[in-house]
Amino acid sequence: MKTILLIEDDADVRDNTAEILELAHYRVLKAQNGKQGVDLARKELPDLVLCDIMMPELDGYGVLHMLGRSPETAEIPFIFLTAKAERSDVRRGMELGADDYLTKPFEESELLNAIEGRLKRSDLFRKGFDRTLNGLNDFMEQARGVSALEDLSKDRKTREYGRKDVLFHEGDELRQIPFLVTGKVRTFKVNNEGKEFVTGLHVPGDFIGYLGLLEGGHATETAEALEETEVALVPREDLLRLLYRDRDVSMRFIRMLSQEMGEKQERLLQLAYASVRQRVAQALLQLHDRFSADHSEDLGVRISRDDLAAIVGTATESLIRCLTDLKDEGLISTQGRDIRITDHRRLQKLANL
Image (tube, rainbow, N blue to C red; front, top):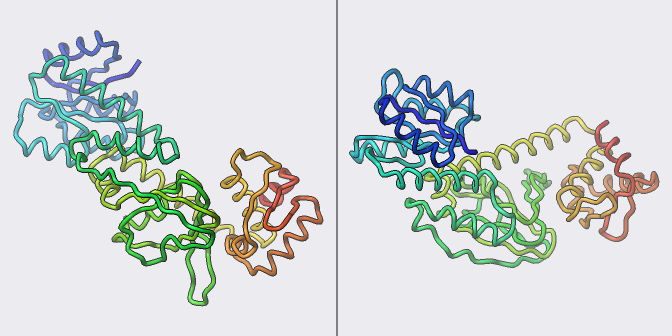
């Protein structure tokens, strides 16, 4: 049963609205002012908030602001109830992050349809999307349902790349953001001496280079295909509309950004403190986790020694010597570019030293 928090200072409106919601099989929490509503939201974490704008102690704008400051409540769908239909009030609420608004008095069907629509949409974006091209299209089509996004482009072309082909170079203007459909891609930066530092390993379902959206639309790294690869090209304007006009999508991309920043921070710590031997073990486990379809312990990964050396952050010659040692110790086996983990437990122990 979904929980609705109703924040309304008018006792008659509060009780009548709560009765409608309870008859529709919602659990209803009631608050008679903004301060009480914020406390209830933080304690109960409802599935949706219905909030009047004009209230004593703390108005609806203040409630929305307070909930938006906390990670636990920032993603809760928020619908304003207002007796004032002036465009400026509606615009201010939407700019602050409200998902919808209802003008009092409202019809019962209008109220229930607005709530049902917001809850379905919230569930969709919390779940994310199936990491395939069809999943991406479904996700974007759902986003298109918002009136502000009706002009969202439907044109998502695909492009194929061969092994070692560059999708984009650091500094390139990104008019389209690649979404990886099939294949594998690495992203990297190059220092003044021409040495590469791998910043990411990407598999189907990943957006590549979306950090460039925050850098004036220019790529912050170079992307190169590790094998035959197909990408869907999502127009930059599509993602920008989603990011700036839709809170659900914004929160999803923030989570993606946070995860990527955490992974890069961990990589920097490894480079700073781990030995080459440890870094090789860590890289092989990372590759296995990212590139092995079913993550079974005996499944290998295919990667060139130069690419693996760039991930580890060492010379190719040093990497080859380390792989030979690991092979002699029975932790891995190799055949051509294929590297198979033969003792996952011992390799994991080495990586965690």
